[in-house]
Amino acid sequence: MNTQRTIQVILLCILAISCIPVVRAVEPAWTYSTTNESVISTIGVSSDGSTIIVAADRLWIFSKDGTLLKKEQYGDNVVVTPSGRYAASSFGDTVYFFSTPLTAGPSDPKKLTKMWEHQFSDPVRSIDLTDDGSIVVVKTQGMGMFLIKTDTKDISSSAEFYNAVLRISHDGSRIVGISADTVHLYGRNAKVSKTFVMKNITSNNPDFVLLSQTVPLMVFNDGPKIRSYDLSMGTELWNARPGGTLNSLAMTPSGSFVVAGTENGDILRYDDSGNLNWSYASNNENSRIAGISEVVISKDGGLVATASDEGTILLLNKMGNPVGSYQVGEQIRTIAMSQDGSILLAAGDQNIYAFLTGYTASARSASPSAVKTPASGSLNTSGNNITSPQNLTRRPVLPTWTKPATSGTITELPTEYSIIRTPTKSPLELGTGILALIVCIIVYGVRRRWTRVSHSGSKKTAAK
Image (tube, rainbow, N blue to C red; front, side, top):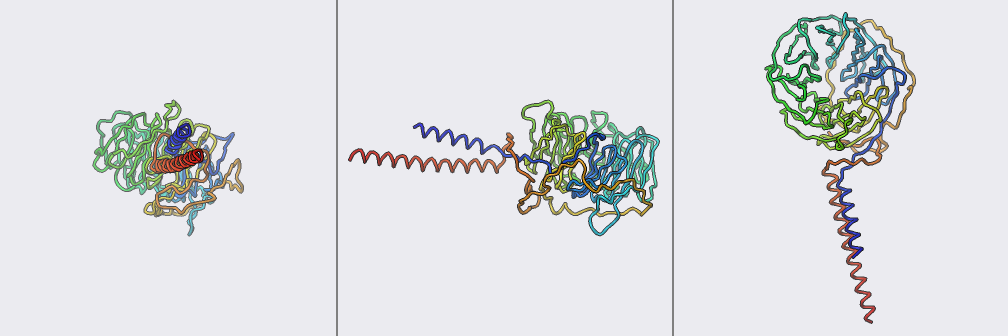
């Protein structure tokens, strides 16, 4: 009887453990420290991760494997085109534009060269760049709004209206300024082409404004709410309110999916109709320092990455199930992910962490955008070629074993470490638990039959 109870207890333990989903704890493929230098502010990365630029009062240019290729003056904000061929940065009251010489192959980050710089009369508050690198839109402190054609350096400006946030679409066809409840649409001459007032807006200014690449669609935060607007009609398409203060927003270029991160640690994904696809609670212990500070999403929407205030990096697949986790041991200031989802970069104050996810983006969204080349001009480079990495901690960049990649799935994470338990179930782990249960039942049945046979044999022996 004691044996039977022991087996039952073991069976229940195995079942309970096997039904808990497994999240692989992964370490960075490489890290880099900018100790004793300026604080890291932003990260720019090309769509395939081949070009990485980190802004920390100067620009640090990396290859995908973590080699520091070059340093450029200056930059506390940086934007990189998907091709990696062009980049723009700002520092104080000056904007800088960089270009890689046109070649037959992919862009070479170490050849990224400063083409020109322009100084404004006021400090630069934000910059944005078209995918082909042909237009830089600049917002300065106060009323200043500027459009710069990067090939000719022609500047158009407008100081008619104040915009808290200024964005340009990937092809430059839509330039959107937003302040409180008012939206201004600009043409390429920096003149206002349309203005409309949004209804029922409750906050002063949004923190995040995201534009779709394919349709005239804008998504932004209105205090704790997410709102989606049709820019051509000036009408609201949908709104949603996550169950907590909104800390971060990300959207696929097509506008098909919007991901939100909240102060209480929730991660939520919505579709283009505002329907909640899934949500994941990352802060089950209700820690005050475990809110989601940053979210990013791959171009096809199949991979989501987040950073928490306490320094936890989390990867989730298209179903909202966690597939990778890492604790950096410091507060994460910013994260960036290549559009194909192959590399995720996170930065604390002075440390950069790079993770190779093993993700393979959908084929239909993997084709690069057409690149327009600005006219050639005099080269004025202030960069210093770096022949060897400095302060670099590198681990194997690629896994030593891989499985054949399938479209839109996680193939392998680079390294597998200790298991992290989460309360969210997934079909795979549940199936494993059922299989374990079946195996244990079979083992128990065989052992019980063996016990009966042995007991029967003992009785016969005693009778003789």
